[in-house]
Amino acid sequence: MQQLEIQKFDLAKDSMSRIKKKEIAKEIKIVAEGDSWFNYPLVLDVIDHLRKMKYCISRQAEPGDTLENMIFGSEYKISRRQNTVTNFGQLDLKETLQDIKSYKASFVLFSGGGNDIVGDEMRFYINHRLSGKNLIRKAIFTNVVYKVLKPMILDFCYKVWHVDKKIDILMDGYDYAKPNGTSYYRIKGPWLLPNFGTKAIEDRKVQEKIIKYLVDTFNEMLKEIAQENTHFHHIDLRGMFPYDHQWHNEIHLRSNEYKKVALKYHKKMVSILGYDPLKN
Figure (cartoon, rainbow, N blue to C red):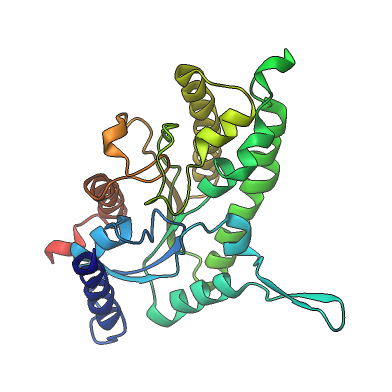
């Protein structure tokens, strides 16, 4: 594990060293904001693999981050003397926008929404099996996706485009997570199986159908944003990782699979640019 962390550190150091060199004008510079798919401790994640491919990337992603925190800021402090609470504001967003401007980035890679869908909030999207109701609260979930998550993602995009109106934003909608009870080194998780357990939904096939609906709805929303905005691109990963052994735990992939995701991003950037920036 120590050797892996050294490798991740070296990749980050090399990438940031190159992105800061203004004389390297021909290199494609990228700013990445997101969650654990872009910053996964002890595993080579999507950004690590793109850095191995020699992309210059400034990473603002944090494990477990939510869309709300990335875009609006949810960190706070409480003053017990004055009985008041103070929100720190849009710290993540300000750093992301500053990096886009400072490094004259060509792309923004964005990974978010997973923790908003299959985290603790997931239990609010499903009914108890013994309630006699449909297991998925479709009206509630659809409202959250289109009335809450979509506006947040668009808010992020519009602020990015205010800095550079022509910059391309690439965002994936994950693949179908696996409700198998596995966790992150017994430190965090599992995430899915406890939610199903509280609702007495014990059949794996039923669990997978519910996850498919949630992930599909989220991806269709991202496709809609892509159709409405020329410089937003949806990376569709659905169906790429159908087997449990491809996953490090319920909601995170293994390193070799993250490499495949990185290649999807690479191919999309190549198609946008009209050439392969790694061959020039």
